[in-house]
Length: 219
Image (cartoon, rainbow, N blue to C red; front, side, top):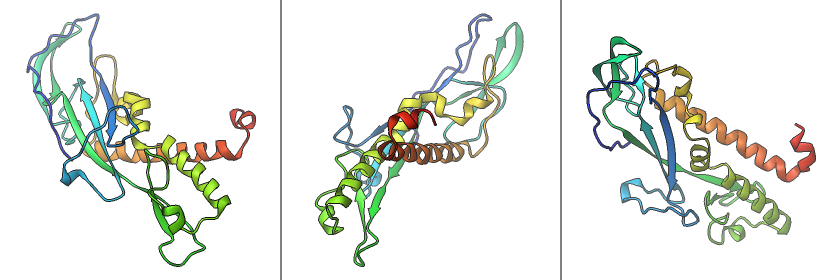
């Protein structure tokens, strides 16, 4: 995990009628098909895998200290909330970043040598001429194309960007003007949640190919 960002002021005086306190998430993948691309440093590269950077914009006011390395660390500040003096906690960095490697593959159980091949999560599907290496027939190529398209529609970057802060489990701890402290392993809980979301969206994307849209919309 890597972290970077600007440091915020150590003082706040929220207005009684308007307290801005929120967390948001966005993501960027090193894929040529995205309008915003980047070239990761060698340490952030893996063969046949996409590098995904997930940015956490944390402007949340916490009622207690946060030790999670992605949401925190936090520092105490004294301020006034709705007329009451209290000590709250703000993240030391406005933006923290996690780098992930996203990898998917398709397999052909009908061949004994190298039965699996990587899939480009953000590209055209099977990488290179791997359809030949997997010895796929025309029907299998047609199926693999649909499976590849389903994987592209349910990538990690897509899940984070489309859901934004709504995809974060930490939002369940928020209240009127801020949030209760998150768990020390909150970043792991968020990754587990995103992985579950990816599995569900992949299943729905594949089902949309197999089931007529009229039936799917009524499920």
